[in-house]
Image (cartoon, rainbow, N blue to C red; front, side, top):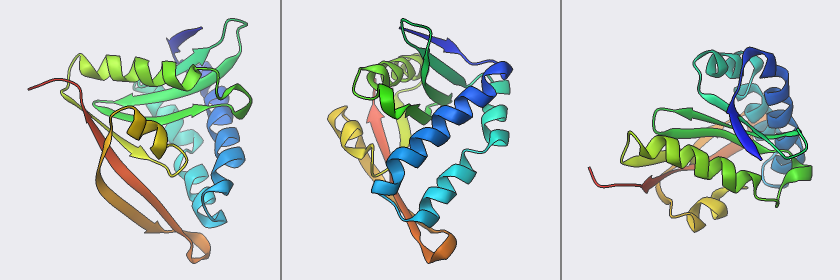
Length: 155
């Protein structure tokens, strides 16, 4: 397995990983308006900007399959997704380890937005809730998530 910086040619792959994962996992946790909100939020334009800014990375398994992605903006971890068929094989852990390592070189705290689907994972990794957020989406549905933080070194 390896993690590499994404290039412009990876745009459709990253969008596919992100949208496929959202469509497969999030309907179990969120109403349809919230799922649609996630899909719009992770638009091709937003992904392309993160790639241009050199903030997006791909996880590739030992067979050359592009199985996951993560985006790092300063000390914020975002867009961490692993294709459903590759979940439970350590790729998400590797992406999170990678992101935490990159951020801890320059920052003392790591921040992320935790979906209901991923919150338990982050708690096990030492993240704590600092804020609870909600937004009304289409159909009057609500999207709820936590902003979480993890201290990685003293200032």
